[in-house]
Image (cartoon, rainbow, N blue to C red):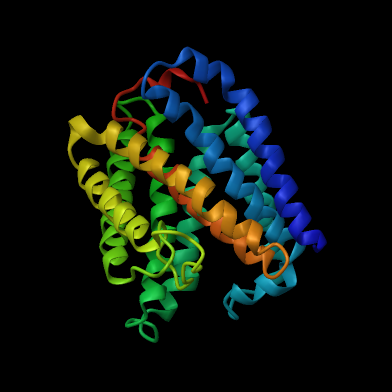
Length: 291
């Protein structure tokens, strides 16, 4: 395996272990469903660390995604790699989280504005284009909810960011859920172009199940009394999907295309964490943790 692959694996593992250790006091003090929310920032941090290493170790390839009209493409690739790593560290240390979440939301919105929207006319009928575009919006939405939930209830930032971010996440979940029924043989979670390997048992049934979960939980995010259970249950199911579905696929690809396997693990785990974060602020127990 290449240095890039090792860096992605090690960064993800270190952040996961360190994050779980550091989150343990919050996990122990939480009760019921709040235990799931205590782990959400850790699940957010792990893929951010993985993608940070990809930016830092494969910058020359990734810089091609930077629009031609923006000077210093290599610099910005390294810069955002460092920024993603800083956000991951902030989330596991649980320090400056409101600032990190706000900047992370801005980061994903910048991707939408400068990378996705300029290609809207040319790729309007491309399913994968829309899947990727709303994915970035969804990631931004989850970070917005987290930032808003760590702001006093009376502040405009809380009253604005939290409902807007949660609405974005909910709409993307419903959109993705519907997609699952049209593309039964594609991998579930974030429904991209990858076909589920033939050795995965009952793959169509898994895809349908995840589709139903996303649609129902997405609707649940619009109902105040069900926001927390919808976010926690759907997020937990997606985490299990990463472990039981994408984990084996990633291991199987270590000798052929390990970066792709790690990207799918990171992508789906970030989506899972985003869904969990959508439940923040539904009541204010999370805000007792100072960030």
